[in-house]
Image 1 (cartoon, rainbow, N blue to C red):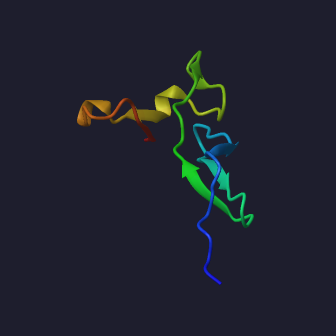
Image 2 (image 1 turned 90 degrees about the horizontal axis):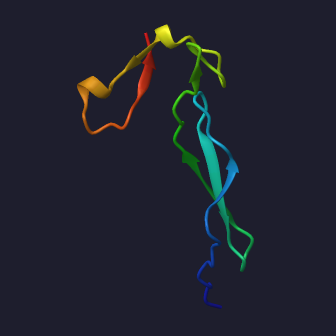
Length: 79
């Protein structure tokens, strides 16, 4: 018996990414029930009054890499 090709659904976000954790998206095969997952990159910090409203990091503890790489939209690392 020949194996059938998978018939995967569109990718669906199963865990939203945050500024401190990658997210996860999944797709499901309607023929065999197989599930594939992949990571979603973290998102930017949501800074209000100098503090990220999601993870609590202080804005002064972040360094933007944008001045060092113009191809980046914005990327922060901890000092």
